[in-house]
Image 1 (cartoon, one colour):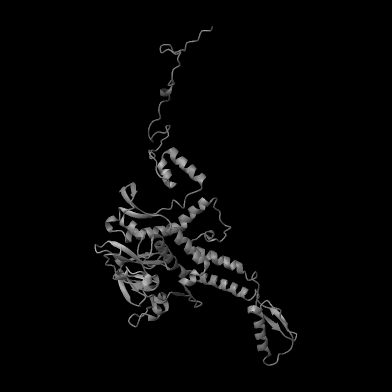
Image 2 (image 1 turned 120 degrees about the vertical axis):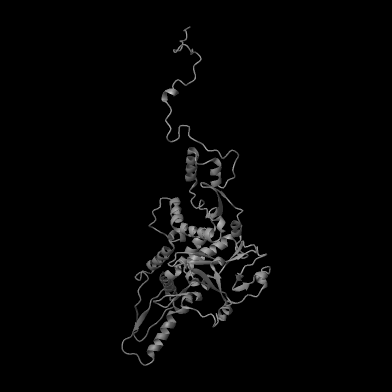
Length: 457
């Protein structure tokens, strides 16, 4: 795929640029530039950061506390990591199929379409699952995914190179979107919209998607503070703070000495050892207990709050949910697919069909995720559904076998139709026409309507 490219986007591997002419060289054969060195190069005086470029530094500032939440810090919160992991892994493992319209009501799978082949391995470093995981992860963190499009000499899309979201700035100039990208060497370059594949989440201006972790930063910080509180609490031997009450007045220097000795005796390896107070000193605790501070409730609330940002059922990330009212796992999965996954799937499908497909294929060929595997019920429920479909004529044997991932059989494409059914609008058959249709007995005569009686011996 890399031969004959006229693409502008090199590969980025561990913050090291691989030029198109170097693609035959394996990544481990070239020197890797350290992260710190890449950052220290900066952007130079010719590329000053504007007010809208602050997020290029990879941090999000809380306006109230001044604390920063980066992508890496957000992923250290187990709830954020779990939500993104569920979304990215679930969507990336769904079959992505291309269909060709044969008529208004008929389509056929088109596995030989060039985009279907491209998505199996979009570039040298990524395959289909890892590539879509990357897309969903960036949408979940930053609200935007950017991919550089490389074309063959004939103008056919041949590669999609994942670019670093935090180093891209979309701008609108003369009613057109220009993408300003700053690579690891600090070199800035503008790209037109036809060179960048941009997938965005919910947007207020139609240009840049909203970052979920930016809007959830307070909930993320709350979770981090609660976790740090727990770490410090147990690090201190599950003891709260307090003070020492001493009768009378201490001599000069005694207060500092007592504080130093208490700190030494209550922390580190000495925190579980016995302490002895003299001079009538008495220890008084001032901190409140974990139960009184509702520590567990705070942590539980932070989990539910972050899940709310991703519309993620808490039980999907291992958090027990006593409010679930689904009567079966099938109904729960249906709710998860409809309200959590469907918006992500449709957003990615639309970006593929509109921004990657040639204009002449817009109304003919399209991509679609298959969610049948997620909606499969238990064996008994599936068999009942198949029986109804087979009985009433909307499923053939091969249709059923296909849903169960079995091979088709000969003459398995026939559809049944109940014999007692008629087309809508037709008159029902005359009841009299059906009388006396049973086979005649051997002793019946055509001219005699009454059957002959047998003679008694």
